[in-house]
Length: 264
Length: 283
Image (cartoon, rainbow over all chains, first blue to last red; front, top):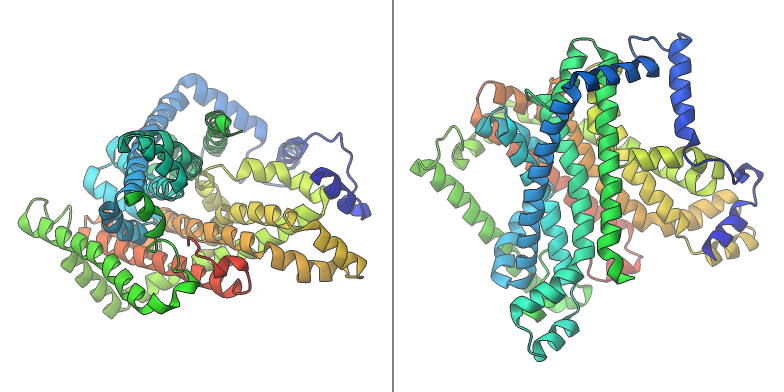
């Protein structure tokens, strides 16, 4: 129904004509071809944009020397640790805020004050507190991702249908059981979308903190290769990080669809 | 009866219902007191923790020293320069991302070729950590405003585009048909129907884009140096000047809070005619 109506309004003007068989990701291929063609033809100087095939070769060299792997593992471990802690802590705080009024009264103003803060501002403090290593990145990602998860868990949990809670209580369910079997599942969709925001934010914080101060990781590699003028290798790492972020988001969406399959 | 309270006692994050004007004054004072006390407790805990020596003043300078530092910065004029630079660049970046994102989003919703070309780019580009492109922007555009603002635009434009597409596609079809059958031109259709109907969702996209533009600007300034709050903070951190670092955090937090609240107020103004404003909303 909707696709039909979209089609009928869109096909009115000739500029909207498009062959149905055109592959969806062709534009990305065209961009890649343009990149290679323009740099090879000398329209764009190689010092500004290394041709795609040299970037690919640089990627292969980095991958086979193991540099990409060790730095990648360092980055991903930091990201996973920080994000995991933020998901656990944020869900807990958010649901408690919805469930107990004193906790809400105490935590809500603090959450509200710090939620809009640009989290990247914490990078220098983490350096002061924890130095240049793993801990400063993990704690940064934890603090940065904590509030989006908290707020989404809070909003999700307080949106629980009271009738469900009353029925369960009158049927003799304990408070803990109501929390586990009713509040948590009904908060889940909103929580999962908050976690998606946090996932994206964790990549941003990870890469920024590694770019600014680190001795290991993707961000460090990007900075160090760029400073050394190895732009083809720098582009290779930048694209790797970007694609990893994209892949993580897509995998997460698949996971969410599976978790929420019971809602259909 | 905390189950009921979960529904009824939520005014702190939700705007007060318009119907409850009678108790508005009392509610406002109550809300303020309720909001101020936990923050004051936090301030007190901070001050006493650093004064009592549980943590060294280097790790956590007393908040009085931090506020003193903010005051010094304000008197010397340094705060105005740094804050002005940061706000100027993030707001210009945000504005370009807003106008460009809405324009591209509308075009993508209305023109199939545009949609076909940009759709994969947007759907791959949106979830990417675009901050990783920072060194490339430095390589291409240098270290000054053009490069910093471009970086903010590049990061902030994606949520605006996706929100605009979703909004423009969600416009009630019969409305469009009626307007067209009454002889509305394409331009009138856009101005009178599509943009107003899409406005709430577009504003939501803009509300996502504004903090992104700030986050990115702070990182960009930290990387590229120069004036601005991010640059000042990273310089303070290099000199192990911890009151300076905390003063920076305080300034950035307040600036971020004001911008986010400001755009929420703007939303309520712009959507005064819309049903969502008549109902309690989460901001």
